[in-house]
Length: 453
Image (cartoon, rainbow, N blue to C red; front, side, top):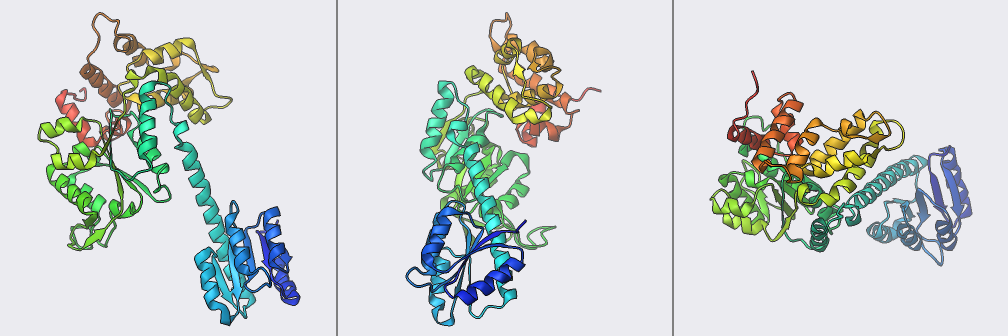
């Protein structure tokens, strides 16, 4: 099988035949034509990985062939061959979109080397386009599950603000999907061709957080053996997602505020400013305004990040979304078991819809993933769900119990359940709960949670 399919465009017959022979001997499938009009017709009819075209072709030039090639879906790489006197035109071809140009006379080794590089570039570009297409499909607004009015309102807001560059604050309990919403904003913004970088500000000490975000220079601290870019620089022209921003210290908030105000950062150990063009999306599982009132979050930073505020409701307040979400997670994780995706029994649906979901959408996904592994038939039954769902569901899900649990009781029991599930591994527990390690430590201290024995 040929390595790739090439279109050769050369008006000199002897040269065309000679080059075609070289390419065929190198195991490429080659179509060769003698003028620009025929080349353009071939590009309309067939798919090519690379076009090798002379610049001077007569009525239609290599530039015309190039413009046609880059206009089609999955465009091929284009290499222009030019004589010494037309270098300016070759440079113009690069500006328009050619991958490379070669100057006559060209040796066979030089030609084949350029083609190999051009094909590698084409494969990479094809892969990038496929990933971008997948990203657009995954984060299309139509793919965000919102059957009820509250989440539909959230998506309407996200759809509207995605086109702007305004800073966004997303608030909601852990596990409600704040990062998913942030990624949807990025994927539908003008910055979607650049990097989306996420960091959990509550998951690391202040000094480490500073070096992660701002970078550092060699010798800035013990272990800083070389210069390193921070996440602000990594996200240049893209989006930086600051999760759990409410967990940051007052000292760090000052540095973050300066970066947002000035549009520039300073690496740790360096006074030289670095300009960054970054859209900030911040998130918090706490009410930041309340933290401001308590003196735990800077008011000026709050107003800087709270240009657009999006509040994601907890899953218990949008029960109409539970079944569509569960079915979505079944499709996503069905590879964990052989055969077609299982269904949900009426009894299992009732349990899911009655439970209070203190871990929100993340807990629902974990529950479905577990049920897919444990289900013994083609239908997921209540027996396949964690016992805690059935124990807690009627009491705190429907509100019909004589003694309904408070949210603090639910949170306490949920933290203990996840700690037991992870064999009291606090790092893994904080990951499952979607909170920082320091946040988990504080909650364990607040609720006096201690490992038995």
